Length: 424
Image 1: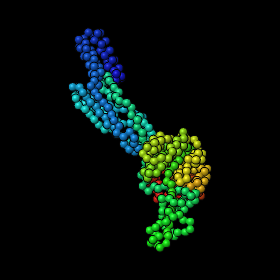
Image 2: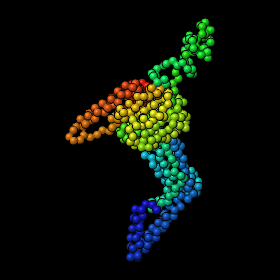
Image 3: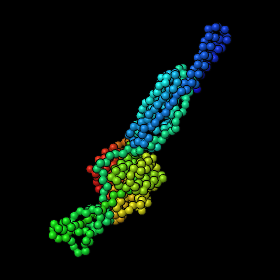
Image 4: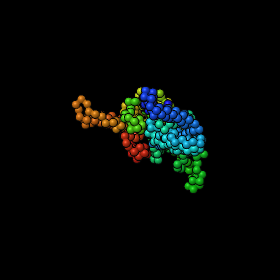
């Protein structure tokens, strides 16, 4: 049944008409009464059989997409009867922030209708598109019939990923000292130059062509091989993030982590990740498309709902780091305890890079309170936030840790591409 208000009105008018007809005995009123009864019966029969011979379905073209992309689904309605279907409504129930638009169409006898529905994805996460719902009714809107077709479809919206053509992993201090180029006495694949032979050099290091050209033995000298595995540490402690919706710091942090991970995987490097949400999420270093999908699914669903300080997460992650790896921390925390926890990584031959979010820049505008002007409130908060951020960056600079400062609205490819990289 459909249109309950219209039905109530029709029942009321019908009741009045029946009472008037039997009270007065006027033949015209009886004619109207029988006409209304016939129309009511015809409308019910029309609605009841309106979906007979109708076939419907839909197919999502890209159930895995990124924020900012367009979700597309193809819908199809077939009318296998010899009668036209002037009005059929089609739609899906959905948990998406903005669902796919429904449509009301007409289908001729023995014909089919097909169309493409689109919606822009604005929020990452896992969502559900319900089964297809098809409805029709009588021309008066008194009755309707509905059917449900197919099964629900899952849709995963991955975080927005930025192209980082200039992103490069900083070299890891494999020998536990400076990351600059050093000579290594053991043979590695990275031969860089030659030098005269000295007592004790291995014979397999002699470069015979250069020896013949110089008239004396020359040996190959090797660079220290730099391992290039990356371990991402995404800080999702709720106290380290501010802002709401797509303009919040956590969305920027997740996009940064996803962009760096995919760029590193594209270079055929192994990537692992720790996400300190309410439940600690961990993926061991691996390379290839399978780990890429695992990482994107993880980042699509995490939220800033953790309650563990970053310093504790860093300490818990240290046993996972092996010599030659690079640790990349993405956080808005200005607590310097976690910076101190990084002090011993260089001696272990582990490189460190930090993407430090300016939390204050992601805060929405607030109103003044307690008689203070809005300017005074904002200025006090700004000064405190700047002081905390500057102190954290200074602590990172003391350990010579490469830092990428990220504020709200910045151009991430430029910041992470190395053009605006700083060490303080």
